[in-house]
Length: 195
Image (cartoon, rainbow, N blue to C red; front, side, top):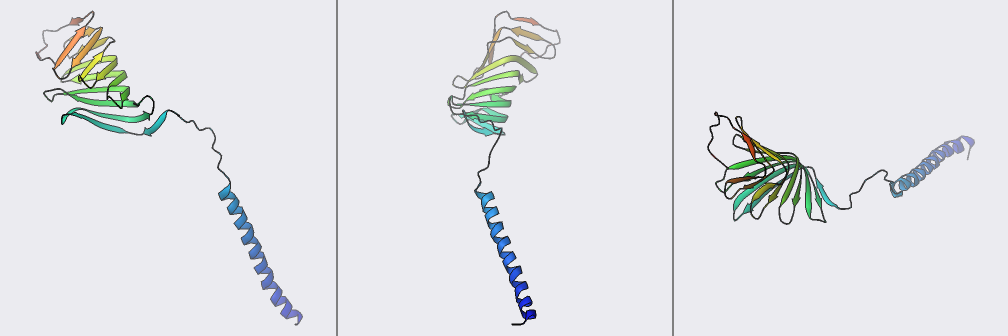
């Protein structure tokens, strides 16, 4: 074989050998990247949480009749105790006469077994033109009662009533105010209805 023929043969073999070496090197490098475990840093785990939801909507019915509709911007479902921790809670309760009572709160806890609730921070209830505010409210599903053991303020445009505690019996369309009940009423107060 002549020297020109050897040069023509060596050049393709050298290129082929270089491509094989690059291919083998790339294979081992990619294999190393894929098999190396990923290290996670600064991750907080909530060992009590079973599930975190960005939004929650739930409807509670009893004997086919809607008792309440709940919406929350987020919910953390906990395994033990069985409850959901809610943020930005918005609930519509229905009385026996199907009248809506609208409740909002910054935070809430829903017992996922009994459907009882505790609502706190910026708690407000609106019924017709009336507004009720309190620090904390409790809802008991079985008797369908909303109650507060903290100071409540119940007002409309023309009157204000304050009390140490309160109970709203939704099935009886009744509000009971207890403890140091005081009020300011106006002659312009027109609505003789009660809840």
